[in-house]
Image 1 (cartoon, rainbow, N blue to C red):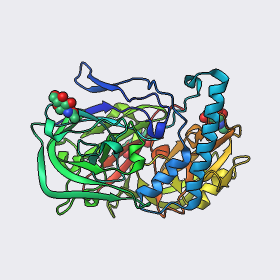
Image 2 (cartoon, protein in one colour):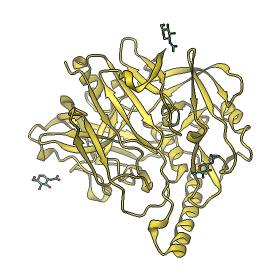
Image 3 (cartoon, rainbow, N blue to C red):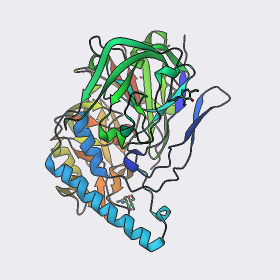
Image 4 (cartoon, protein in one colour):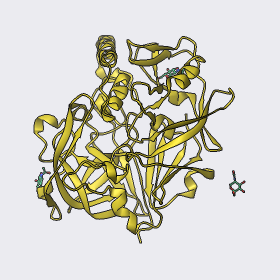
Length: 425
Ligand SMILES: *[C@@H]1O[C@H](CO)[C@@H](O)[C@H](O)[C@H]1NC(C)=O
Ligand SMILES: *[C@@H]1O[C@H](CO)[C@@H](O)[C@H](O)[C@H]1NC(C)=O
Ligand SMILES: *[C@@H]1O[C@H](CO)[C@@H](O)[C@H](O)[C@H]1NC(C)=O
């Protein structure tokens, strides 16, 4: 039996030129217990700040909803402001390196090895999808911008899955697609021998721009997998028979490196008891409800809010009524068409936001909801809590998941558990 696997993941990454503390160069080493750890190397390249409207834009794409025009325009508005701040800071200092570097948890990536000998890729472990796809030697070089790629020809264990293809369409009509290989794949020492690795022959431009992300590892239910004619199992479903316990856990951290564990629940990573709630897998997401919410020290509002826990979505998206109840407590906050979401003066003070999992309550620190400044020199900040109304689905993304230790339990029926842990803010 594989008893455990444990590894650290890198903090936020660097998507669209996010000035994160990360890669392109990341090396992994094993510690004395054989657990994988990551060395983080500061990215020497000057970066513009991350454009927060892109986080929302990408969420629309991911869930197949055309993004409203005002969000596309908001990206341009923020790009323009960032460009201006960038050139101003160059004039002021003569050095691009003096630009304040934003570190926002746009995504988390985890080192995964594919093939024999192992090729290391940094993948986004995504409970909101079920395809494991990677940049590869089949991806046109014009679509690869600094990502590491998987070369099946360099792996003695790779095998083409004949006649199989995959295709993911996004809300803007763009997409990623390609062929499929079976190969050995390992995450933190947990190995699956015949994992479907979907090699991209085309990636959508939003991925090309994310130079620190070499692909996605879907941890949704296998029913969502897009490989045809026969759909393929996720890494978790393949590993499940050899796991001690049919679980994986996510311990995502605010502006820091967290971890995913497969096959065990690490008592050292949470306090108190785990509160479980039922999961419905329709149509393949980890769908469950919150039992209510509270803004700051206000009364807990009991109400069932159904949504999905998605480690691959950056922000928290809830119904407009909940979001307006929150921002009513923030001086100067407004739902800005111009910036594509709720923004507020960076000097305003923010309340915490509490959500319920059955009887338990989890409080998101105010700092998590102060997602980022619009640009390094702006006095306007973009909210980590946004309305789900255009998306048509509530998404409990990283802003919420970071505030808890989360157990994804693949038992029959599945369930999800939340526990408290010490929080940095
Ligand atoms: C494949 O392996 C060869 C020999 O080790 C190496 O030179 C080459 O860079 C590898 N190709 C890719 C695309 O990784
Ligand atoms: C945890 O659960 C046990 C058993 O149900 C209960 O006795 C205990 O009070 C709970 N602890 C906390 C911190 O809620
Ligand atoms: C929000 O974060 C920015 C840094 O991104 C900080 O300067 C500002 O003081 C914060 N505002 C609040 C209300 O916490």
